[in-house]
Length: 130
Image 1 (cartoon, rainbow, N blue to C red):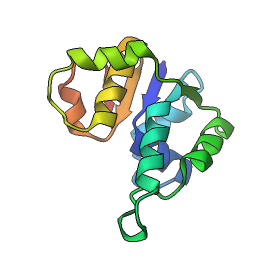
Image 2 (cartoon, rainbow, N blue to C red):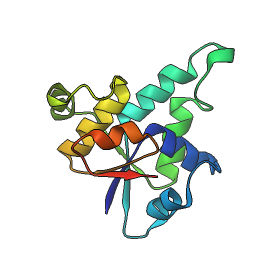
Image 3 (cartoon, one colour):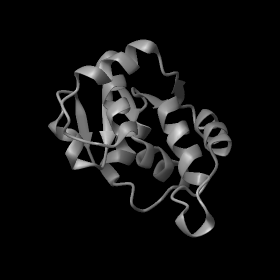
C-alpha cells in the first residue's frame, strides 16, 4: 500500500504524539506500506514554524522534520508540475492550499492520503480517515 501522510499525521508520527490514532499508527508501521511525505508538507511546516513564538503552529523546523522523516524511512516526494496542475481541476471543497495540493498529489501519483481532516474525504481520492 502506498501512503501519503497529511502534514499533521507526519508530525504526530515523528513526535509519537498520542493524537496519532492506533489506526494511523498501524497503517504507517505496516511492513507492506510505502510511506510518502510531500515537499508540500515541508513547505507548510517551514511557513508555520517561522511564525512568531505565540502563533507558531509547528513544533519543529522543516529541516529538522525532513531529516527525521528520512531517518524514519519515509520517502520525500517532490512537487511536480503535474501535481500543481492537478489542483486546477479540484472542486473548492477545502480552502487550505496545502491540503488541496496534497489531494492533487494523492490523485496524480496515485497514493492513499492518510489524514485526520474529515473535510478531505469529500474529494475524489483514496482517503484513510484516521
